[in-house]
Image 1 (cartoon, helix red, strand yellow):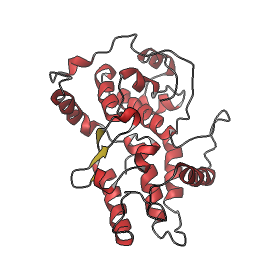
Image 2 (spheres, one colour; image 1 turned 30 degrees about the horizontal axis):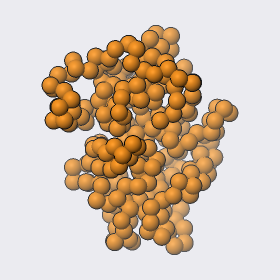
Image 3 (tube, helix red, strand yellow; image 1 turned 180 degrees about the vertical axis):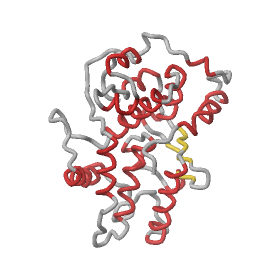
Length: 259
C-alpha cells in the first residue's frame, strides 16, 4: 500500500464544489490571499516520518487476536491505517457505520463530524482493497454488526481502548516522539496533510491551486484550518519535497491552535 494517494480524487473534489455552487469549475478560483491563515498560539503536533509509519504498520501487521475478539488483528490495523491514508479524525474512523463505506466505488460518507458537517472521502484503490479484505473477515464473524470497525462486543470502538493499544504499538515500533509530546492517533491527520504537501512540492504542483482540494477532502470550513495541519519539519521536508527548509518557509503563513 502506498502511504498516501490523494491526486486521483482532486478532479472529483472540484466537481463536488462546482455542483455545490462554490466554483465555476476553474482552478483559478482558488488562488489564496497571503493573509488568510489565522495567527494564534503555537502548537507542534508530532509529524511521523515515512520510516516510522512503516515501522508502526509492521507492528500492526503482526497484531494477535484475543479471546472473544478473533478479528482484532484485522479491525485495529485497518482502522488506524485509514486515519493516515485518508486524513481522518480518529473519531471519524471509529464511528464509521457499515452503510457509510461503499467498497464498490471506494467512497466513505463521513456523517455529522465536527460542527455537524458531513463530507465524502474518496479512497485510493489500495486503501479500498484493504477495507474490503477487512470487511470480508469481520462480516464472517459479525454478520449483523453496525460499526464498520467493531470492538469485541460488536459496538463502536471507544477512544481510550484504541489509544491504549496504539501506545503499546508505538513502544514496540520504537517511535517515542520528541520528548515534548508523545505521538497521538490524531497526529496521523497532521501527518497526512504535511506529507501530501511535501509530495506536491516535489512534483512541482502549484500549492495555491492544490491546497483547496486538500481542504475540501479533510472537511475544513475554511482554508486557514488546512494551513494549521501543514508543518514544515527540517530534515523530513528536504527528504520528501526536495526543497530546503529556508526556501519552503515562504510557502505557508504562520498559524496555530488544534482543530
